[in-house]
Image 1 (cartoon, rainbow, N blue to C red):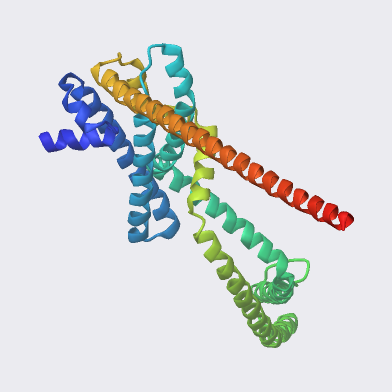
Image 2 (cartoon, rainbow, N blue to C red):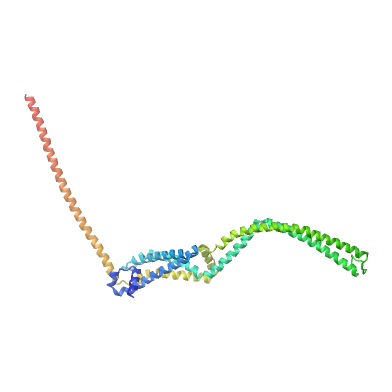
Length: 371
């Protein structure tokens, strides 16, 4: 338990030496540290899932997920540890507002991948609908891109229709021949039973129609086979183009596609929109919890000792500054005094030397004129 407490103290960014002197503050900073730690864990899980949808490989997702979780943990730890309890409540809130804004942004980033995971089934269903829609559009566009297939199908249907008309004519002649044999009176039969002259004529017409049908079938079947071969060639090309597009359609399940699907689901379903908002608020509450704990907690002995330690540093800094400044001023004064004294002494020596030279020159002139 002692090691666990020290670990959560570390997560809260508390000073161990001060916290040991204030045992009543231990539980507060254990709670703050635990919140910071589990926020980092949730961030690692969320980032790992988001990156798994991108890389589709578990090891890069684990590595970058842990890296992101440690970064969020370190950032939360810095935010909490940098806050100071002041005597004035408004001054604390004024300093905490930028940290709260940052915490909310982090919560929004962390919550989105977990929302995608929670609504994965609904999102997959929506993605399947979009894929089906894309496939239908792709097939329609490919059909427009290969009009030759439709033209060949029309020619093929025309040949089959021609065969059908020939078959219908042969069947009609067959019925007239049967009616003539059995003596059925119609507009085209005599009504006499037996194989008479009319029956033989009908039989000849039937043989001619059957032969014409067989010849037509043979000719058209050759043309139909040729058309089928051409249709298969164009169909193979169309299928090849569709397979190229199919790879892109099957890959329509990345992070951006899932976020778009989630957005569509929240627009279509009020229940999902409400659940999405609640999940987002939950993560905002988790991410901002350490900051609010620091804000709403009363000022304790830990804060007094921490402020005292910081004030000691400030006072020591002020003392050192005054001492250094005084020493510097003394050195500057001494330098100025000694420098100015040496300057005056040099000036006096120079003046005496100049005066001696002048007097020497005057004497030389006087001696010259006296001579």
